[in-house]
Length: 252
Length: 262
Image 1 (cartoon, rainbow over the protein chains, first blue to last red):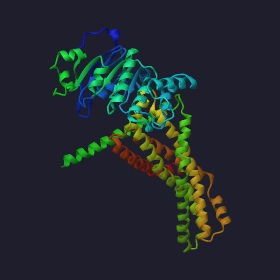
Image 2: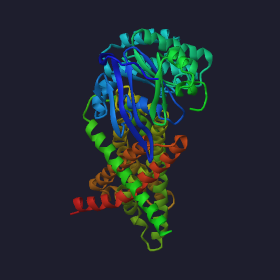
Image 3: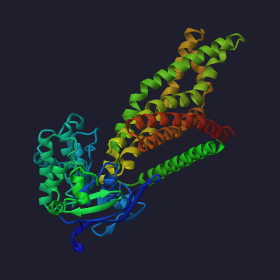
Image 4: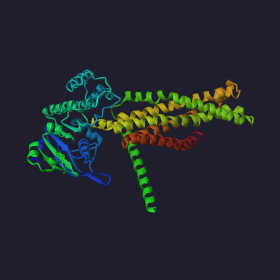
């Protein structure tokens, strides 16, 4: 099951023969895939297959041993931290546990990227944060410490902070892990809302209903390579493929 | 068995070499990013409060008790030889040149070093350091430099305060236990301790502040293995910075002796 050929102008991110080892263990043995403009690509795989490393590599938090990571046609692997700043304004990372700064309030967390990268006045920042919190169902929590929020609310604040700079690509690292159905649905709705605005995304998850709810295509990372990529319809047509077997909890 | 031993030694040497290299890289990043914008003045002031103001208590207790004990020990020891009158001279010089800078720095290595290493370690394991980078900002500028600057400002000031507190402790014991005249004590201190003694003592703490802050930041940022790793990093930060202070003290004393005592 492979993805159809894509026009180069539609590709916003691409992995080419990505290889990375940790100690003597080669985790990625030549990962290659493409992310198209406005699509949400689900990245599935068992624990320890290196899915998060793929996401981290897309914003330069990890470097491969060899291979290319292209963002809008630009290889980010040789870039230094200073050069990566521009990439990180375009590509947002939603951490699994929110990774909120616990020494700051929710408001300060959300204001952080705006103060770092824009010349917005404090009134404009306040207005932007108020709108975003309302959109995420978090109004009234501006001055609350992240530690006082529930897990689901922390994830929503983390998501809000990631997208406050209006990125072109969002990387979701298990955003629905450990959430109750209410919060899971809220996160799904937010991802779909961003998708409707044309934001591309890679969605790493073990949560199959969420993957099917938000992803256009699903890829399986297994034994260091992308073993299969396909749409939900393609999955259903090929019941014995590796991806379908993985989704159904069968041995791959 | 010999092969195993050699492998173990080799692995340890490799670890030390890697750590030294990473330490050097952290230091070079700090130097490279220091003059660049943005400057986090507010964060630096906050750190001066946490590192400096909140450490006054521990510096007071350390310097005061050390001054008292030194006066008592020297006083009782020298009394047998009729040398009790030398107590103000000996104690004040020892405190200003060595005891206050080294003891205060060791206590601060424990308090401040442990605080920095555990805070940064927790930020590392909860991916807050990654989040700083992912949001297009620098953890060196935002987290490391304010702490180093705060230490470089606060530690010498605390040691300077420690000098006065230590001598005050010695004065109290000198008067109450050894029967010395307080005016005689103060006069002897003022005629013995010269500005060079005070300056070299404080200059040492500038280096000690650097050892404490850079070492603690290094271990905090390189935590591995979750919460247990935070504990290990904290312990390593305190032990390493304390050893650096003790070893560094000898070389700094020698260097200042050559520079100022000629």
